[in-house]
Image (cartoon, rainbow, N blue to C red; front, top):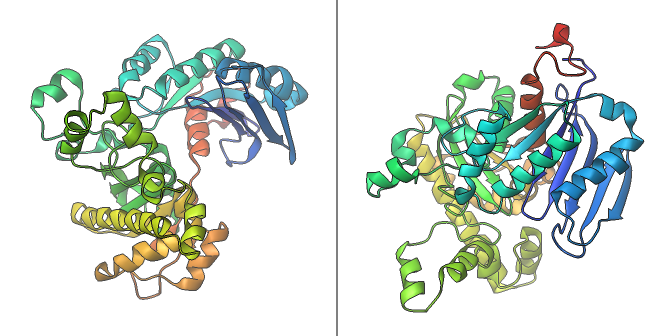
Length: 411
């Protein structure tokens, strides 16, 4: 692989498409952007290259194909050298089921497997398929690589991923816990090992990825052994608009006693709950922190429940792991909310955690490293970099006959 090689990373959501051109060796970002409000009248695209920010309006109801066409025709056409350095396209794929424990080159079998998992990620996997199809048409000579959110969690033991349901539901229909955010948890695991001066296959951490979607993972010897999300991203922690764990009997109560249909229950649990539902104000942690400071009771309650649930999971994962080398905070909230970290760590004082207030405040401004006191259990803040993981994996899978491939420099 040439030292000047670049990878185009695509992250297709249901109504958005994030893109970035990344050096897989250094992680340096040459280009980044996003297409938003896709499928709607106000579809648009914005991007940054060389420090210059630009934006454009897309045709009404534009989809992922139009964003990729715009990227090729209008953005990369202005940066020929960058386009010529591309060696692969890396795609984030939310759900790969049990079929994938690592990233793979995309072929017909892989596309069929992603399609088979649509029922497990109905908002995401169809968008990923659209993105792969559009990228394959735009870059027919470049390999397409799928990097799965679920792959990192395929190392979980059966007692961690099997639900206490009739076993035939797993055997015949694949109903089990899969977990998400695996690319992020994998990145912070590798980075934590570096900061702790440990080999990756010897590091034991509890990784908390906190954002509008939130999950926590127990990592033993560098491998995921339990995680909070399940069959879908709804299980586990309180999130921006998702409820996380609830009594399954609640669903029957909503249906039989309150006449909710399945769609209404799905919307309630995924789009109207979590921080938004509790606070009746916002799903944005920054808004809630300010509102709580101003005396908004609902905002304070939402933050309290968010932190309490997270602290309970951390305590539970201490029972999963033989030892914990570090607790790690990452994701938008995990990296930027000193208040959430402080409240969670205060709840965990019985397990030997304590926060250094000065270090905790500094970490709000992108400072990586420990925020614990000298005598307490190690707590790290590590900014995640899922795009770099995708770029690295894609570059490593580049076939020898790919344009711009330099076999003499491949690691």
